[in-house]
Every structure is written in structure tokens, then in C-alpha cells.
Length: 124
Image (cartoon, rainbow, N blue to C red; front, side, top):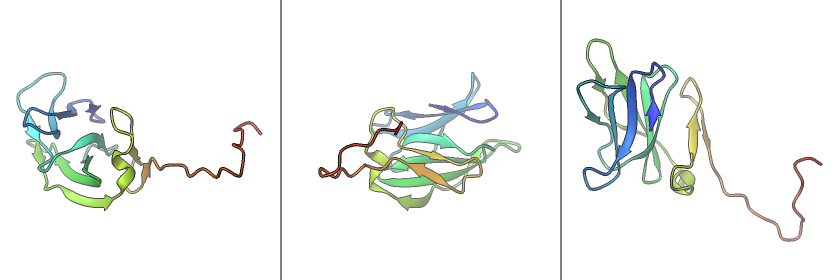
């Protein structure tokens, strides 16, 4: 679950349709519930101005424009990029995050180990 930056909307994952999908509803209460994803989705994140919502569909990072001008409206989901490790962490662990302006993304990546070299201490 992710609360929008203004605290008025909650983005969350639900399996009520039979698979994981992203929904948005007013927070803490109010009328309405909107399905954001159309082909499955998990791990929603808001851009810091609340005008875009990101989520993972399989191994693809998706973006949907959000407007709260006079009524709540959603744009069409757009594919940003595909990255296999977006789903690697599973569960509730964050596998990505977005910069405040929505222009950069931080993702989890596996560490390749070299057996010939001992691990380095973070304090050395």
C-alpha cells in the first residue's frame, strides 16, 4: 500500500479479480475505487507530486498519469522499461523506487560473487 503525497488517495494491490491488480481509493474514506492496472500489477509507488503512479506488471515498470482536477481520472498505462529483477525480491520488499521528479529509478540488482576474493567489510 502506498499513500499519495497529499494523503488523499491510497494505491494498493488486491487479488479480488483473481490476480494481483493495482487499485486506488480515497483515503481515509470516501466513495470510489478505481482499477489502475489492466494486465496484473504489484508494488505501486507515487511520483512526489501525485500526478503519476508506477507499478510492476510482470517484469515491466509501468506508469499511469493521475489527475484530481475536478474528478479523479486515470490515463492509459504506459510501459517504461523491462527489468527482470523488478520481481526478484517478491513479498513486500521494495524492488524499486522512483525519484521525486519521476525521471530516475532505483532498482534492486543481484550481486555477483567472486569466490576468489574474500568479502569486503563496509567499515574497512
